[in-house]
Each structure stands twice: as C-alpha cells, then as structure tokens.
Image (cartoon, rainbow, N blue to C red):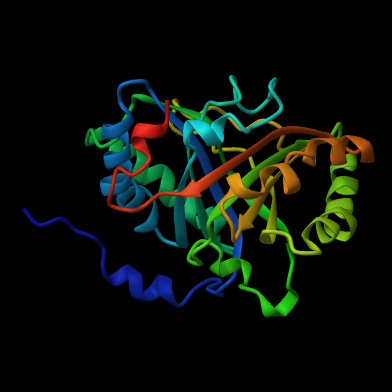
Length: 280
C-alpha cells in the first residue's frame, strides 16, 4: 500500500500566500523533563521531535534549543514567578521562527501533526510544559543598528546565550505603553555602551488553539504579557550581575508592569548530551 501524499497540491500551494524572509511569529517552549528522564527526553527531542514535530513543518524556518544548567537556574528571578513554579523549573527552552503571515497555515499543520505523533506513540510524556506559547513579533531593538546580525538570522547566528524576560502589565492599554517604553527608551539605553546583547526581540503571546494537545496548558496573559529574548555574544554567567540582575527594578521603577521571569540559557550542542548531567 502506497501512502497518498497529495503531491500535486504542493505546486499549487507554493504559488499562494506570503513567503518573505522575515519572521512574524515565534514558538517559544520552555520544558522540564521529569526527574530520571533527562537523557531520554533530550535524545527524543533532538533526534525526533525537533525535526518531525517542528522543523519539517511548513513555514517554521529556523529553530534553536537552549539549556539552563543548575548554575544558570539559580540566577533566575523573581523567586515567586507567575511563569515558573518554582522559578528554576524549565531547564530547556526552544525557540522557532515562523514566516510572517503564515501563522494560521502553520497552526493547521502543527495541530494535525501532533495528533499524528500522539497516535504513533512519538510524543515523550514524561515532561512538563512550563511556558509554551506561540507569539506575535512586536519589535526588535538592535545594539549596532544595521551593522549587526538581523533578527531573522538570530537562531542561526552563533550566539553564546539568551536571556528570557517575561513582563506582565496590569491591562492591555498599559501593555502598549510598556511596549513603547521598551522600544524607545529602556532597551536602547540597556543595549548602548558595550552591552553583551546584540539585540532584543519582543513578542506578544497568542492563545493556543482549542484543539491543542491536552498536556499543553492554555496561554496566560495574551492581552497583558510581553516576552523578551536577549541574544548574547557572551556567556550569561560572565555578565549577569552587571547587565541583567537589575531588569526587574527597571520595570518596576517605570510603573508599567511586573517582571515575572528573567532566566539565562546557553545553546545546546546538537547531537550530544552535553549539559544533561548538570541540570540537577
């Protein structure tokens, strides 16, 4: 029996819709493997799920995994986080870029493929989704202007680490004020003068579809939350105190929101179990 892949439809679909090089959306997924399952989870995610459950899908054109060793987890704040309970939960995070204008098309495929992966027993269930959300790109702020790497290259560029920052505003209106403050004042100031971060990408989370997998909880704060990714050219451990330990105070002083997570990560080494023995 030969599977019908409807190959004739691919030529038709290729002639339709946006296909620009920029990204309009992201999937950001922070996951905690259950104790004792660290090695098996890492191999399943890299050897199977990263490819079959993500990169092989239409309109998801870049992806990269990052890891927080126990040393990095202990740098996180605030202690009482609305994102991670405890704040050290979620030792892996993966970020994917999705082509602008293709969110709806990608979501139809991703719901379908995840149903198929579950049916075929190719989903690793001994893990907890701590912070998993599709997000709309709001703005990118650069340290070096046109001289630096573009944001659509960020997941391919050999950055030394990232810092994930989640901020909650009190209302949708205040979130727009917060976004403008970040874009025009706070981020340019933070990036100036030798910052280890080359850029910061800012996102607004979107609700997950109603037919999502049951083990992924619905996204919170879709009207009030912003997610920031700081892309670093130095190891976050080397620059933490000087450049990142005070982000919560900056936002609080502006009176525009609450920092609910500031968490550093370093890139995984694809195809290896590097760092797995340093998670606990």
